[in-house]
Image (cartoon, rainbow, N blue to C red):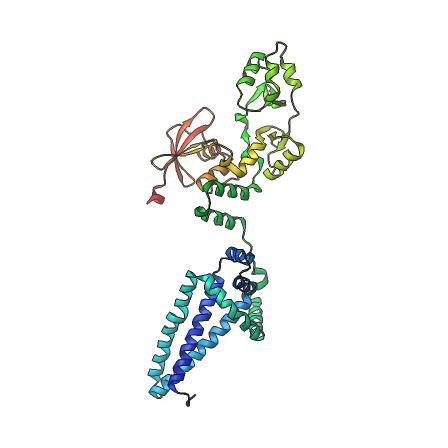
Amino acid sequence: MNEIPLSMLFGILVLMLILSAFFSGSEASLMGLNRYRLRQLIKLNRPGAITANHLLQNPERLLGLISLGNHVVNNFASSIATIIAIKLYSDDDVIIALAVSILTIVMLVFSVQMPKSLATIKPERLAFFAAWILMPLLKIFYPVVWVVNFLVRLLLRMVGVDVKKNNNEAINKEELKNIITEAESLMPVRYQKMLLGILDFESASVEDIMTPRNEIVGIDLEASIEDIIQQIKSSPYTQLAVYKKSIDRVVGFLHLRKVPLLVSKDDFDKQVVINLLTKPSFIPENTPVHTQLLRFKNEKICIGLVVDEYGDVQGLVTQYDLVQEIVGELITDDVTARKQSDGSFLIDAGITVRELNRVMKWSLPTEGPKTLNGLIVEFMETIPESGTSIKLLGHPLEIIKRDENAVKLVKFLPDKKKSV
Protein backbone atom coordinates (compact mmCIF):
# COMPACT_ATOMS: atom_id res chain seq x y z
CA MET A 1 0.00 0.00 0.00
CA ASN A 2 2.91 2.37 0.70
CA GLU A 3 3.96 2.26 -2.96
CA ILE A 4 0.50 3.26 -4.20
CA PRO A 5 0.43 6.95 -5.16
CA LEU A 6 -1.89 9.31 -3.29
CA SER A 7 -3.86 10.09 -6.43
CA MET A 8 -4.78 6.44 -6.81
CA LEU A 9 -5.66 6.13 -3.11
CA PHE A 10 -8.00 9.12 -3.40
CA GLY A 11 -9.49 7.57 -6.53
CA ILE A 12 -10.11 4.28 -4.69
CA LEU A 13 -11.67 6.21 -1.79
CA VAL A 14 -14.05 8.03 -4.12
CA LEU A 15 -14.94 4.70 -5.75
CA MET A 16 -15.71 3.21 -2.33
CA LEU A 17 -17.96 6.18 -1.51
CA ILE A 18 -19.81 5.66 -4.81
CA LEU A 19 -20.21 1.93 -4.15
CA SER A 20 -21.43 2.63 -0.61
CA ALA A 21 -23.98 5.08 -2.01
CA PHE A 22 -25.06 2.44 -4.54
CA PHE A 23 -25.69 -0.19 -1.85
CA SER A 24 -27.51 2.27 0.43
CA GLY A 25 -29.69 3.57 -2.39
CA SER A 26 -30.36 0.03 -3.66
CA GLU A 27 -31.64 -1.10 -0.29
CA ALA A 28 -33.93 1.93 0.14
CA SER A 29 -35.32 1.81 -3.42
CA LEU A 30 -35.92 -1.94 -3.59
CA MET A 31 -37.51 -2.21 -0.15
CA GLY A 32 -39.57 0.93 -0.81
CA LEU A 33 -41.13 -0.30 -4.05
CA ASN A 34 -44.90 -0.36 -4.21
CA ARG A 35 -45.57 -4.10 -4.51
CA TYR A 36 -48.92 -3.60 -6.27
CA ARG A 37 -47.40 -1.22 -8.81
CA LEU A 38 -44.53 -3.71 -9.26
CA ARG A 39 -46.97 -6.52 -10.07
CA GLN A 40 -48.65 -4.31 -12.63
CA LEU A 41 -45.31 -3.58 -14.31
CA ILE A 42 -44.51 -7.30 -14.34
CA LYS A 43 -47.76 -7.91 -16.24
CA LEU A 44 -46.50 -5.33 -18.76
CA ASN A 45 -43.26 -7.36 -19.09
CA ARG A 46 -40.93 -4.64 -17.82
CA PRO A 47 -37.54 -6.44 -17.51
CA GLY A 48 -36.34 -4.28 -14.62
CA ALA A 49 -39.55 -5.00 -12.69
CA ILE A 50 -39.21 -8.75 -13.28
CA THR A 51 -35.60 -8.75 -12.05
CA ALA A 52 -36.44 -6.61 -9.02
CA ASN A 53 -39.36 -8.87 -8.15
CA HIS A 54 -37.11 -11.93 -8.38
CA LEU A 55 -34.74 -10.35 -5.85
CA LEU A 56 -37.61 -9.37 -3.55
CA GLN A 57 -38.94 -12.93 -3.50
CA ASN A 58 -36.25 -13.59 -0.91
CA PRO A 59 -35.68 -10.29 0.96
CA GLU A 60 -33.47 -11.99 3.53
CA ARG A 61 -31.01 -12.99 0.83
CA LEU A 62 -31.18 -9.58 -0.84
CA LEU A 63 -30.53 -7.70 2.41
CA GLY A 64 -27.70 -10.12 3.20
CA LEU A 65 -25.99 -9.25 -0.09
CA ILE A 66 -26.48 -5.50 0.35
CA SER A 67 -25.24 -5.60 3.95
CA LEU A 68 -22.21 -7.63 2.93
CA GLY A 69 -21.36 -5.21 0.14
CA ASN A 70 -21.92 -2.16 2.34
CA HIS A 71 -19.74 -3.38 5.19
CA VAL A 72 -16.90 -4.50 2.91
CA VAL A 73 -16.94 -1.18 1.06
CA ASN A 74 -17.21 0.95 4.21
CA ASN A 75 -14.43 -0.91 6.02
CA PHE A 76 -12.20 -0.70 2.96
CA ALA A 77 -12.93 3.04 2.65
CA SER A 78 -12.01 3.51 6.30
CA SER A 79 -8.72 1.67 5.74
CA ILE A 80 -7.90 3.77 2.68
CA ALA A 81 -8.67 6.99 4.60
CA THR A 82 -6.32 5.85 7.38
CA ILE A 83 -3.54 5.09 4.88
CA ILE A 84 -3.97 8.50 3.23
CA ALA A 85 -3.78 10.21 6.63
CA ILE A 86 -0.61 8.30 7.52
CA LYS A 87 1.00 9.17 4.18
CA LEU A 88 0.20 12.84 4.63
CA TYR A 89 0.79 13.28 8.34
CA SER A 90 2.99 10.36 9.37
CA ASP A 91 1.90 8.73 12.64
CA ASP A 92 -0.06 11.61 14.19
CA ASP A 93 -2.92 9.81 16.00
CA VAL A 94 -5.01 12.97 16.25
CA ILE A 95 -4.85 13.57 12.50
CA ILE A 96 -5.71 9.93 11.79
CA ALA A 97 -8.72 10.07 14.12
CA LEU A 98 -9.79 13.35 12.51
CA ALA A 99 -9.50 11.80 9.03
CA VAL A 100 -11.70 8.85 10.06
CA SER A 101 -14.24 11.26 11.60
CA ILE A 102 -14.37 13.37 8.43
CA LEU A 103 -14.80 10.20 6.35
CA THR A 104 -17.70 9.14 8.61
CA ILE A 105 -19.49 12.47 8.05
CA VAL A 106 -18.83 12.36 4.29
CA MET A 107 -20.16 8.80 4.07
CA LEU A 108 -23.20 9.64 6.16
CA VAL A 109 -24.11 12.57 3.88
CA PHE A 110 -23.06 11.41 0.41
CA SER A 111 -23.16 7.62 0.72
CA VAL A 112 -26.09 7.04 3.05
CA GLN A 113 -28.54 9.90 3.48
CA MET A 114 -28.43 11.39 0.00
CA PRO A 115 -28.92 8.13 -1.95
CA LYS A 116 -31.68 7.01 0.44
CA SER A 117 -33.48 10.34 0.05
CA LEU A 118 -33.14 10.06 -3.72
CA ALA A 119 -34.46 6.49 -3.56
CA THR A 120 -37.64 7.65 -1.84
CA ILE A 121 -38.26 10.18 -4.64
CA LYS A 122 -37.60 7.85 -7.60
CA PRO A 123 -37.70 4.31 -6.21
CA GLU A 124 -38.59 2.51 -9.44
CA ARG A 125 -35.82 3.99 -11.60
CA LEU A 126 -33.10 3.32 -9.02
CA ALA A 127 -34.45 -0.09 -8.00
CA PHE A 128 -34.64 -1.43 -11.56
CA PHE A 129 -31.13 -0.16 -12.33
CA ALA A 130 -29.77 -1.67 -9.10
CA ALA A 131 -31.51 -4.99 -9.76
CA TRP A 132 -29.46 -5.55 -12.93
CA ILE A 133 -26.23 -5.18 -10.94
CA LEU A 134 -27.31 -7.00 -7.76
CA MET A 135 -28.55 -10.10 -9.58
CA PRO A 136 -25.11 -11.18 -10.92
CA LEU A 137 -23.45 -10.11 -7.63
CA LEU A 138 -25.85 -12.40 -5.77
CA LYS A 139 -24.87 -15.34 -7.97
CA ILE A 140 -21.16 -14.64 -7.41
CA PHE A 141 -21.33 -14.15 -3.65
CA TYR A 142 -24.22 -16.54 -2.96
CA PRO A 143 -22.14 -18.97 -0.81
CA VAL A 144 -20.99 -16.11 1.47
CA VAL A 145 -24.52 -14.66 1.70
CA TRP A 146 -25.92 -18.12 2.49
CA VAL A 147 -23.46 -18.67 5.33
CA VAL A 148 -24.18 -15.21 6.81
CA ASN A 149 -27.97 -15.72 6.61
CA PHE A 150 -27.67 -19.22 8.09
CA LEU A 151 -25.80 -17.84 11.11
CA VAL A 152 -28.37 -15.04 11.49
CA ARG A 153 -31.29 -17.51 11.38
CA LEU A 154 -29.51 -19.74 13.89
CA LEU A 155 -29.01 -16.88 16.33
CA LEU A 156 -32.60 -15.68 15.91
CA ARG A 157 -33.92 -19.18 16.52
CA MET A 158 -31.97 -19.26 19.78
CA VAL A 159 -34.02 -16.28 20.99
CA GLY A 160 -37.31 -17.76 19.75
CA VAL A 161 -37.73 -16.01 16.37
CA ASP A 162 -38.50 -18.08 13.28
CA VAL A 163 -37.78 -15.99 10.17
CA LYS A 164 -39.84 -18.20 7.84
CA LYS A 165 -42.98 -18.07 9.99
CA ASN A 166 -42.78 -14.30 10.34
CA ASN A 167 -42.17 -13.64 6.65
CA ASN A 168 -45.80 -13.02 5.71
CA GLU A 169 -46.56 -10.35 3.13
CA ALA A 170 -50.32 -10.96 3.02
CA ILE A 171 -52.39 -7.95 4.02
CA ASN A 172 -55.41 -8.29 6.28
CA LYS A 173 -58.88 -6.82 5.77
CA GLU A 174 -58.24 -3.72 7.88
CA GLU A 175 -55.06 -2.91 5.91
CA LEU A 176 -56.98 -3.32 2.64
CA LYS A 177 -59.67 -0.96 3.99
CA ASN A 178 -56.97 1.62 4.68
CA ILE A 179 -55.64 1.25 1.13
CA ILE A 180 -59.14 1.88 -0.29
CA THR A 181 -59.74 4.80 2.06
CA GLU A 182 -56.42 6.41 1.09
CA ALA A 183 -57.27 6.00 -2.62
CA GLU A 184 -59.82 8.81 -2.33
CA SER A 185 -58.26 10.81 -5.16
CA LEU A 186 -58.29 7.84 -7.55
CA MET A 187 -61.99 6.96 -7.46
CA PRO A 188 -65.38 8.55 -6.75
CA VAL A 189 -66.50 8.35 -3.11
CA ARG A 190 -69.53 6.21 -4.04
CA TYR A 191 -67.29 3.50 -5.54
CA GLN A 192 -65.01 3.72 -2.53
CA LYS A 193 -67.98 3.06 -0.24
CA MET A 194 -69.03 0.16 -2.46
CA LEU A 195 -65.62 -1.51 -2.10
CA LEU A 196 -65.68 -1.00 1.66
CA GLY A 197 -69.16 -2.52 1.70
CA ILE A 198 -67.87 -5.61 -0.12
CA LEU A 199 -65.10 -6.04 2.46
CA ASP A 200 -67.64 -5.86 5.29
CA PHE A 201 -70.11 -8.11 3.47
CA GLU A 202 -68.79 -11.42 4.81
CA SER A 203 -68.74 -10.29 8.44
CA ALA A 204 -72.28 -8.84 8.40
CA SER A 205 -75.38 -10.74 9.49
CA VAL A 206 -78.98 -10.13 8.45
CA GLU A 207 -79.58 -8.63 11.90
CA ASP A 208 -77.20 -5.80 10.98
CA ILE A 209 -79.21 -4.64 7.98
CA MET A 210 -82.82 -5.76 8.61
CA THR A 211 -85.81 -3.43 8.89
CA PRO A 212 -86.65 -3.51 12.63
CA ARG A 213 -89.86 -5.15 13.78
CA ASN A 214 -91.53 -1.85 14.72
CA GLU A 215 -90.99 -0.51 11.17
CA ILE A 216 -92.44 -3.51 9.31
CA VAL A 217 -95.41 -2.47 7.18
CA GLY A 218 -97.97 -5.26 6.80
CA ILE A 219 -101.64 -6.16 6.46
CA ASP A 220 -103.57 -7.22 9.54
CA LEU A 221 -106.28 -9.70 8.53
CA GLU A 222 -108.23 -8.63 11.61
CA ALA A 223 -108.71 -5.16 10.07
CA SER A 224 -111.76 -4.31 7.95
CA ILE A 225 -111.73 -5.16 4.24
CA GLU A 226 -112.00 -1.42 3.46
CA ASP A 227 -108.83 -0.68 5.42
CA ILE A 228 -107.03 -3.57 3.73
CA ILE A 229 -108.04 -2.32 0.26
CA GLN A 230 -106.90 1.22 1.11
CA GLN A 231 -103.56 -0.09 2.38
CA ILE A 232 -103.03 -2.15 -0.78
CA LYS A 233 -103.78 0.85 -3.02
CA SER A 234 -101.56 3.30 -1.14
CA SER A 235 -98.59 1.03 -0.31
CA PRO A 236 -95.22 2.07 -1.83
CA TYR A 237 -93.92 -1.51 -1.46
CA THR A 238 -94.20 -4.44 -3.87
CA GLN A 239 -94.68 -7.04 -1.11
CA LEU A 240 -96.40 -6.84 2.26
CA ALA A 241 -96.39 -9.23 5.19
CA VAL A 242 -99.88 -10.46 6.04
CA TYR A 243 -100.59 -11.44 9.65
CA LYS A 244 -103.31 -11.84 12.26
CA LYS A 245 -103.14 -9.23 15.05
CA SER A 246 -99.34 -9.59 15.51
CA ILE A 247 -96.44 -9.92 13.10
CA ASP A 248 -95.47 -13.03 15.10
CA ARG A 249 -98.57 -14.66 13.60
CA VAL A 250 -97.61 -14.03 9.99
CA VAL A 251 -99.63 -15.91 7.37
CA GLY A 252 -97.59 -15.08 4.30
CA PHE A 253 -96.46 -12.38 1.89
CA LEU A 254 -98.75 -10.64 -0.58
CA HIS A 255 -97.24 -9.56 -3.90
CA LEU A 256 -99.11 -6.37 -4.80
CA ARG A 257 -98.66 -6.82 -8.54
CA LYS A 258 -101.14 -9.68 -8.38
CA VAL A 259 -103.83 -7.61 -6.67
CA PRO A 260 -104.79 -4.40 -8.59
CA LEU A 261 -107.25 -6.04 -11.00
CA LEU A 262 -108.88 -8.07 -8.23
CA VAL A 263 -109.32 -5.17 -5.80
CA SER A 264 -111.82 -3.46 -8.05
CA LYS A 265 -114.11 -6.52 -8.18
CA ASP A 266 -117.14 -6.72 -5.94
CA ASP A 267 -116.30 -10.19 -4.65
CA PHE A 268 -112.88 -9.13 -3.38
CA ASP A 269 -112.55 -10.19 0.25
CA LYS A 270 -110.01 -11.46 2.78
CA GLN A 271 -110.15 -14.98 1.37
CA VAL A 272 -108.93 -13.65 -1.98
CA VAL A 273 -105.96 -12.09 -0.17
CA ILE A 274 -105.23 -15.37 1.63
CA ASN A 275 -105.37 -17.31 -1.67
CA LEU A 276 -102.72 -14.99 -3.18
CA LEU A 277 -100.23 -15.34 -0.32
CA THR A 278 -96.84 -16.95 -0.70
CA LYS A 279 -95.34 -19.00 2.11
CA PRO A 280 -93.27 -16.84 4.52
CA SER A 281 -89.53 -17.45 4.77
CA PHE A 282 -87.94 -17.25 8.21
CA ILE A 283 -84.28 -16.33 8.66
CA PRO A 284 -82.24 -16.84 11.86
CA GLU A 285 -80.93 -13.45 13.03
CA ASN A 286 -77.26 -14.53 12.96
CA THR A 287 -77.35 -15.70 9.33
CA PRO A 288 -74.43 -14.14 7.39
CA VAL A 289 -75.53 -11.70 4.68
CA HIS A 290 -73.66 -13.53 1.91
CA THR A 291 -75.29 -16.84 2.93
CA GLN A 292 -78.77 -15.33 2.83
CA LEU A 293 -78.14 -13.69 -0.54
CA LEU A 294 -77.24 -17.11 -1.95
CA ARG A 295 -80.33 -18.63 -0.33
CA PHE A 296 -82.58 -15.97 -1.88
CA LYS A 297 -81.07 -16.79 -5.27
CA ASN A 298 -81.39 -20.58 -4.93
CA GLU A 299 -84.94 -20.50 -3.54
CA LYS A 300 -86.03 -17.75 -5.95
CA ILE A 301 -87.46 -15.58 -3.19
CA CYS A 302 -86.62 -11.99 -2.32
CA ILE A 303 -88.05 -11.35 1.14
CA GLY A 304 -87.96 -12.98 4.57
CA LEU A 305 -88.65 -12.41 8.25
CA VAL A 306 -85.74 -12.39 10.69
CA VAL A 307 -86.43 -14.38 13.87
CA ASP A 308 -84.55 -14.85 17.15
CA GLU A 309 -83.80 -18.11 18.95
CA TYR A 310 -87.36 -18.22 20.35
CA GLY A 311 -88.94 -17.79 16.92
CA ASP A 312 -90.14 -14.25 17.57
CA VAL A 313 -89.98 -11.90 14.59
CA GLN A 314 -87.23 -9.31 15.00
CA GLY A 315 -87.32 -7.70 11.59
CA LEU A 316 -87.63 -8.05 7.84
CA VAL A 317 -84.95 -8.30 5.16
CA THR A 318 -85.19 -8.21 1.38
CA GLN A 319 -82.84 -9.05 -1.44
CA TYR A 320 -82.70 -5.33 -2.14
CA ASP A 321 -81.36 -4.74 1.40
CA LEU A 322 -78.60 -7.31 0.85
CA VAL A 323 -77.53 -5.83 -2.48
CA GLN A 324 -77.68 -2.33 -1.03
CA GLU A 325 -75.21 -3.46 1.65
CA ILE A 326 -72.67 -3.74 -1.21
CA VAL A 327 -73.53 -1.01 -3.67
CA GLY A 328 -75.16 1.43 -1.25
CA GLU A 329 -75.59 4.86 -2.85
CA LEU A 330 -75.56 3.46 -6.39
CA ILE A 331 -79.10 2.08 -6.03
CA THR A 332 -80.71 4.38 -3.50
CA ASP A 333 -81.64 8.03 -3.38
CA ASP A 334 -82.34 8.03 0.37
CA VAL A 335 -80.36 10.66 2.21
CA THR A 336 -79.63 9.42 5.73
CA ALA A 337 -76.87 11.94 6.47
CA ARG A 338 -77.28 15.55 5.33
CA LYS A 339 -74.38 17.92 5.84
CA GLN A 340 -75.31 21.38 7.14
CA SER A 341 -73.62 24.73 6.47
CA ASP A 342 -72.06 24.77 9.95
CA GLY A 343 -70.31 21.43 9.34
CA SER A 344 -72.81 19.38 11.37
CA PHE A 345 -74.75 16.38 10.01
CA LEU A 346 -78.49 15.68 10.32
CA ILE A 347 -78.83 11.91 10.51
CA ASP A 348 -81.88 9.65 10.59
CA ALA A 349 -81.58 7.73 13.87
CA GLY A 350 -82.89 4.61 12.16
CA ILE A 351 -79.64 4.30 10.18
CA THR A 352 -77.68 1.13 10.96
CA VAL A 353 -74.42 1.52 12.83
CA ARG A 354 -72.61 -0.19 9.96
CA GLU A 355 -73.96 2.31 7.42
CA LEU A 356 -73.19 5.21 9.76
CA ASN A 357 -69.59 4.04 10.07
CA ARG A 358 -69.33 3.83 6.31
CA VAL A 359 -70.90 7.24 5.64
CA MET A 360 -69.01 9.11 8.36
CA LYS A 361 -65.80 7.00 8.27
CA TRP A 362 -66.11 6.21 11.97
CA SER A 363 -65.57 3.02 13.93
CA LEU A 364 -68.56 2.81 16.26
CA PRO A 365 -69.05 -0.70 17.74
CA THR A 366 -71.32 -3.02 15.74
CA GLU A 367 -71.47 -5.90 18.23
CA GLY A 368 -74.29 -4.40 20.33
CA PRO A 369 -77.21 -2.25 19.08
CA LYS A 370 -77.61 -2.33 15.32
CA THR A 371 -79.05 1.17 14.80
CA LEU A 372 -78.03 4.67 15.88
CA ASN A 373 -81.24 4.92 17.93
CA GLY A 374 -80.35 1.69 19.75
CA LEU A 375 -76.82 2.93 20.40
CA ILE A 376 -78.10 6.20 21.89
CA VAL A 377 -80.74 4.49 24.06
CA GLU A 378 -78.19 1.97 25.36
CA PHE A 379 -75.73 4.78 26.13
CA MET A 380 -78.35 6.96 27.88
CA GLU A 381 -80.29 4.05 29.41
CA THR A 382 -83.44 5.99 28.47
CA ILE A 383 -85.01 7.65 25.42
CA PRO A 384 -83.59 11.20 25.60
CA GLU A 385 -85.78 14.24 25.10
CA SER A 386 -85.44 16.54 22.09
CA GLY A 387 -82.72 19.13 22.67
CA THR A 388 -80.57 16.76 24.75
CA SER A 389 -76.86 17.00 23.94
CA ILE A 390 -74.46 14.12 24.63
CA LYS A 391 -71.07 12.88 23.53
CA LEU A 392 -71.60 9.42 22.05
CA LEU A 393 -68.32 7.48 22.06
CA GLY A 394 -66.34 10.65 21.32
CA HIS A 395 -68.84 12.19 18.87
CA PRO A 396 -70.92 15.16 20.15
CA LEU A 397 -74.57 15.09 19.10
CA GLU A 398 -77.92 16.71 19.77
CA ILE A 399 -81.30 14.96 19.77
CA ILE A 400 -83.48 16.85 17.27
CA LYS A 401 -86.60 14.71 17.13
CA ARG A 402 -88.10 11.75 19.00
CA ASP A 403 -91.41 10.03 19.53
CA GLU A 404 -92.72 7.92 22.38
CA ASN A 405 -90.62 4.87 21.53
CA ALA A 406 -87.46 6.02 19.78
CA VAL A 407 -85.10 8.78 18.71
CA LYS A 408 -85.93 9.83 15.14
CA LEU A 409 -83.47 12.56 14.11
CA VAL A 410 -80.00 13.45 15.40
CA LYS A 411 -77.57 16.25 14.68
CA PHE A 412 -73.89 15.30 14.94
CA LEU A 413 -71.97 18.43 15.81
CA PRO A 414 -68.54 19.21 14.34
CA ASP A 415 -65.75 18.17 16.73
CA LYS A 416 -64.01 21.41 17.74
CA LYS A 417 -60.75 19.65 18.57
CA LYS A 418 -60.56 18.04 15.13
CA SER A 419 -61.51 21.23 13.31
CA VAL A 420 -58.72 23.31 14.89
